[in-house]
Image: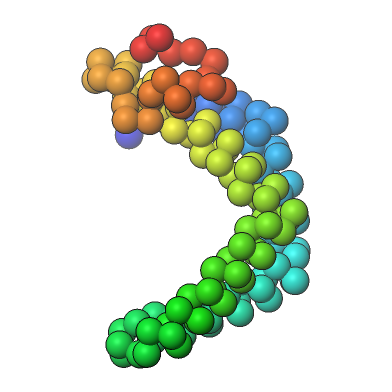
Length: 132
């Protein structure tokens, strides 16, 4: 790979790492990783989801499958309602948006085409690109 490309990519990575959205995601990741309660809930959810899949694959009684589905949905809602998960999910989406926008901008300047993630609805946090 061209040495200048690597150098510029490293510079861009440093700028992205310093962005407040990246910092927020890194802090949220540490909290997420440290939350034993949340990890426990997620492990239990995974086991219950596997039970649901087994019931579906075995063509189990509709009532039994519906009960297990409700249990899994309730567990999912509990996990997604956890403040640590809410912050992690929000921060992760903001960070992913940075990467998506950078990818779209690079794609535009290399190919002249606007990438699939470069849509009016994706521009809320965008600092601008040639596609505007």
